[in-house]
Length: 298
Length: 279
Image (tube, each protein chain N blue to C red):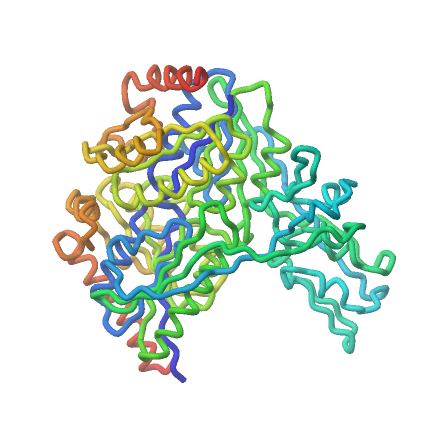
């Protein structure tokens, strides 16, 4: 049965170079769909120059709305709400949309039936054409919730596109952290590339994200970015990888070329030689992994 | 004065800046609310004296009493309950539960569904230099840090003391939760198109919440024109700059704080705090 290989790029810690690696890999991989699942702070589009952009609204959870005409200001809703989402403004009970979790408890408990649940639009998703293939991304409204569901939506759209062209891979630039958006990005993935840096913070977050990807039983490999900034810590990462049987896919040095290319809104692998070699290695190790898998029929 | 430090984009130097700001002040409480990846301790090096487990109420159904009427599962907005009347089974999926209490509210049978506490993370407290350290750490696999963040702000924020709050990255709900009680919000950005794009999103958040705001430009290579232009148009001041420096990056990678790396920066941070307090 046809199923594209889902490769997710994660980091735990933010700013380690996920998008740099993801966009550069998008140039190398053939026959793939590209997706940006960092819907909170989507940046990949800046490098991808998307065209023919199509898309739609993303409806989040429903939130409570109090009808001020029927409300008798009894305060029952305020006592019931566990999200502190109901305030009194000018003597009238009101719902703070950003705090409301959409649980419906206030509406169930209201003696006057004055509270209704109404869906809110919390973002948009887009599919587009780029020089490197079809590209799906999204934008969550600032301050909104539910980014896990929007991540799932982005992945769903990417899978539909993959299906339509029988793409072999879906390359997904993931969100930072270890919470709901990350688990949404990880669920169903075939491989996760974890981009880390040799700082104490980077290592601490790397260990947490590895635990999470183990929990989801997703095969992982590590890319060490700016490895030459602290060679002792780079050795620690390599030792950690070895002890836990995780591949080091490649090591990228600190580079002003990469920063300059990103400032010019260009995918850095074209111009920066120091990125080309490690990238070729990363690409080879991953495609080899899937190649062997196919041969053994796994 | 409560100051929250946010960024939008990860890795711009939020934690590096906020820890040094806290370390240059007196009678200060430092809050690490980046509960998915708390790293402030690396630079602050606190003596931890207390660990408090943090839990949320979740339902527990007694299948001997339950009549399997399905009202709880119908009312749950998160699909965290599934009732199988034929098998006389009530299934609960804790990772989907938001601890809202709807199920126990609608259950018509006495004692069939009670709420019990489920651990989602830990709050660590301790001391450093002239301040208190408070950190939230979410258990791996938990979907949301928001309850832990709001719990810490509710129970541990002392209205009398200065607070420096290190917030999570991103532009969604956890960020909003961490800055709700702040008097002033510092945005730490970097002058790349990524930094600028994400900063625009968090500026929208602080505007909606009507917070006083200033921006720290980190990793400054004299290339921050676009960032400054955007800030000028929006009436937001640049309050601090940190140059791009490999030396600083090396210090950071070893867990050495900014004030122990750049001579004289402690005084500048103190002055910055005074300026902010007078806004």
